[in-house]
Image 1 (cartoon, helix red, strand yellow):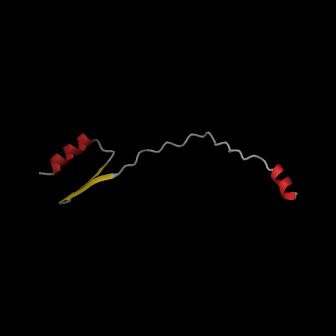
Image 2 (image 1 turned 30 degrees about the vertical axis):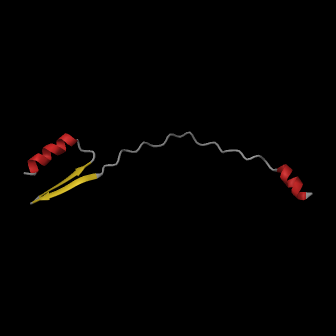
Image 3 (image 1 turned 90 degrees about the vertical axis):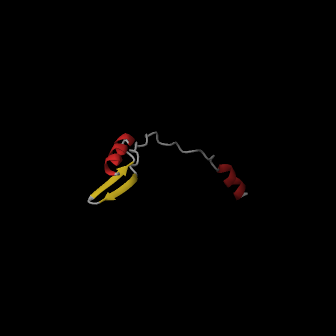
Length: 63
């Protein structure tokens, strides 16, 4: 009898409301693409660098 009463008294399961706070926007990752060392010059190229600028720099540094 007690078990039957416990089952009847159970409340329905309902989903909890989620907060409506917007997620913080993260800046894109700045990944290392290329690292060069030539004599005393060291160049590190990251993904945020404009490809045209990277090509111009490489043309000047590499023969």
